[in-house]
Length: 188
Image (cartoon, rainbow, N blue to C red; front, side):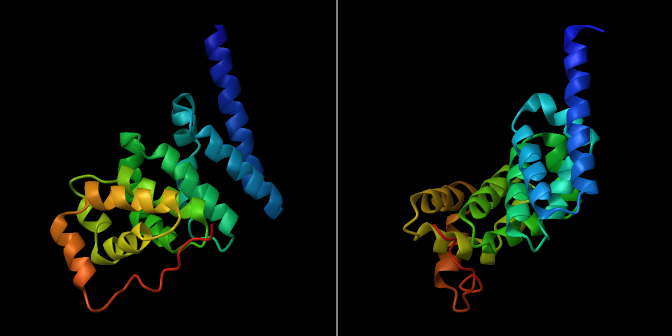
């Protein structure tokens, strides 16, 4: 076995150990730590095939429905790192993951919201754009664009400018029933 094959086997084995540890532990702290590690490993494209083989994108999606905000934050962060891959993007969209990502916009955690907005942008395709830019989402982005938090307002403005039509933005500005008003701004 060449050095590269050995390193790949070691990498897969390590990632498999993390997934197994996540599934086997009852400790919330351990789950959070392992999920954070998996989210960090999802940054590196060298890990993509292994993570997909281990069904880590599904694990990240599952975390978006958890009550534990830390697990949600790491789950959406990991998804954000993986969803630029065409196959992973397609799998997320086909599994109904878009609604789970949209639900993350109501988080009180800044990093969760930022990752959710970025993930929505990455998941945008000709077929998914209508679902991503529904009126409640556009209203939410308008509200975020007014935030004193520069990271949040800048990212929301990019979303509004690059992913929404002017008509969608205008309709969201003038609608009488503001469906996004109940969504709190994330804490700084």
